[in-house]
Image 1 (cartoon, one colour):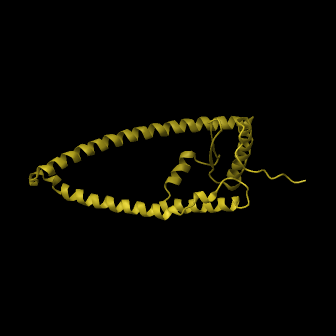
Image 2 (cartoon, one colour; image 1 turned 120 degrees about the vertical axis):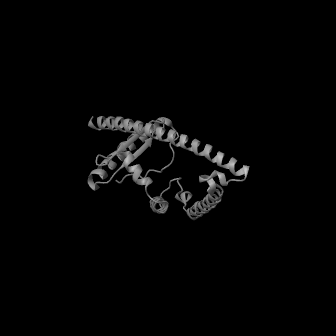
Image 3 (spheres, rainbow, N blue to C red; image 1 turned 45 degrees about the vertical axis):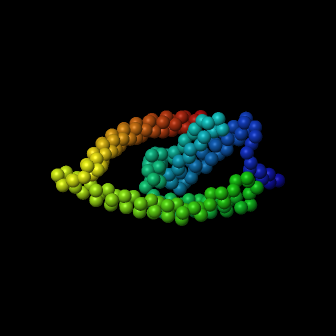
Length: 200
């Protein structure tokens, strides 16, 4: 007698949902651990339980979550969109014969061309603004050549904006450094908890 095919849909009962989550999470973590060891691939899984508690798994051979995220962020826009399209196609194949309420077509990548065009147009606009500002600020190095009070006002505004930008960037670097330190602490803590969990 074969296994009965489970209809995939949201469980209404919170306790049943939590129990199913716990059971399936263990199975997925086991599969991820096996994939990490057998294929020597970097694996990172992030779950959020029905009650909102996060679980993070990073494979043993991985150099950490930040390494995986850094590699992902270094992909070009085109590469990311290519990976996204591939993932959507895989999801379509998986859910073709499924009775799930999930609609992979809702993740359609038809808007990718529009997004790319939008970025391209925005880049052109920014280049145009840069050329205009450069013309006005050309006399920056020699303020004696400036004959218009509006140019002086603009130069003053530019200096103030530059200082504000520098301060903002300094604050951003400080915050990013604190976040990295916190991520390292959390990653270590979660890894230890997961290690202790799997040792039991």
